[in-house]
Image: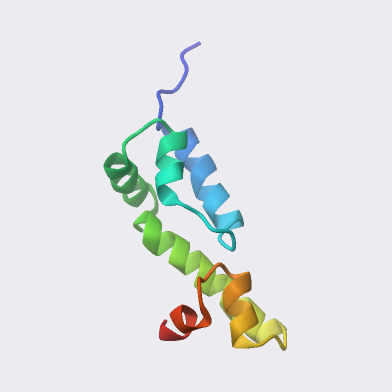
Length: 96
């Protein structure tokens, strides 16, 4: 049975799911590429090919979707929501 090469589609599916489920954490996208044993440039290219988004844009979209849910469903402050969704500062969140 042949094993899929490093950076194969199944590996990317795992990474995409990981980012979607852990967007609220401090994620270094370069670590994702390293985990797949591929260059960061190739990681960016392949990620966009599979998702339609750059890794950075995908992570930002996941964070914004999480923040949107919290804004609607809770009475948390914008600052608390920003931190819970992985933004470094509330100012960074409010700019978006």
